[in-house]
Length: 238
Length: 230
Image (cartoon, rainbow over all chains, first blue to last red; front, side, top):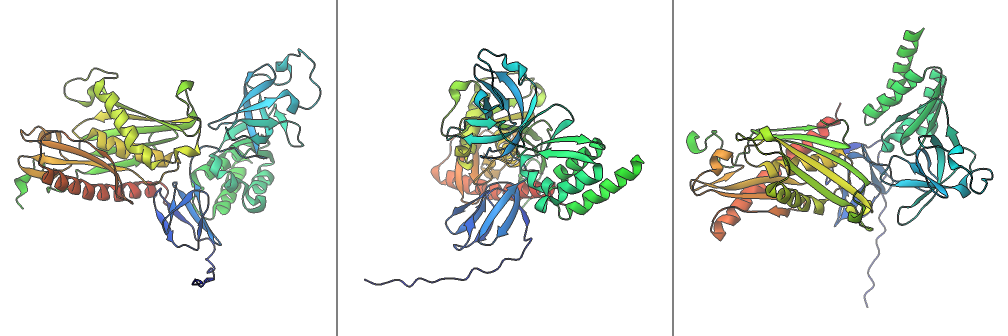
């Protein structure tokens, strides 16, 4: 039996920031050494984009960050949800995605009496900042309030952002969000489902910054643009 | 080539002037408006979202539902509004032509709804609707294997033509053959026909339509990229 020689090819270093807007069906690269990441798939030798988005090469993996799309829930994500209904032993929560989440009474802090009125704890229409503890195969999502960061949202307000743009709002190691927080003197809390809770001095300006990220997420040098806009707006306010 | 070969001075294999616009409906997850000459379609995509009625739910994949609707003023004789035999059929046919391009298994238990409104009709509404729907799906961020492009070809007055107008379609020997395909792989997802032709001519007509599809594909790509340039 012939032993086939196994060739070990060195993976070439890809240049950083090699980003490009691609449409579904675009062939990003023809190579068997590179793997398709999220938003991409392989067909024969080609790595092909699944979505309209920005293609990024990270080592051996090519992935595409979509410019739009719904939130797909992941375990341990923090989300901002709205209570939509109260059931026998749980609350139904809208987390602005294709699937509804459930908050069982067992996942709420403190002891709930038998036959207690559940709307005393969370009423319909109230907003919560919660953590996803489980996403089942059948997309049954369980939330928890037994977490350090989980809380009821009773003041400030909540704005929406495209879920795929959440990493852009946060920035590298939180650079973007800390900048917005410091400049506007606002408290910002981001749910992975794209809802942002803000309260503080310049809520309107922080809101404007989020809108700007929504519209310009695909352009480079966004942090500088936001910084410029914040300067301008804050000077106007004085 | 004489200039009087077609009623609107086009070449035999030329598509009517196209216009494509992405993101025309703010409340939809994705939307597009496509014009092919005097045919005009607005498509809007909603979802993936929870499915109602619940009995349509599939545990392993998303359900694609397309609604094709011709507005009463889209044709010269007022069309009675609402569902009819023709719109129901076209909704089904369009669903089937888009389905192979989508990764529906990524969103089990949900529905993806596409609404297509024909605001102006001058032949080729189903193909224009497919082009618009495909752009709207991409704009909504739904994972796709490829864009779907579509165009009709056919025969009128013994000439094989691409993208016929209503006037040409009314010729006595007219044959209309709408084709939808995924341009990267060349797979055909819609193939219908009206009229009587020889098998040889069918092959020729399909070839003409395929060339047309490739041209539309370039336009679709351009329209999507333009939305996010600057």
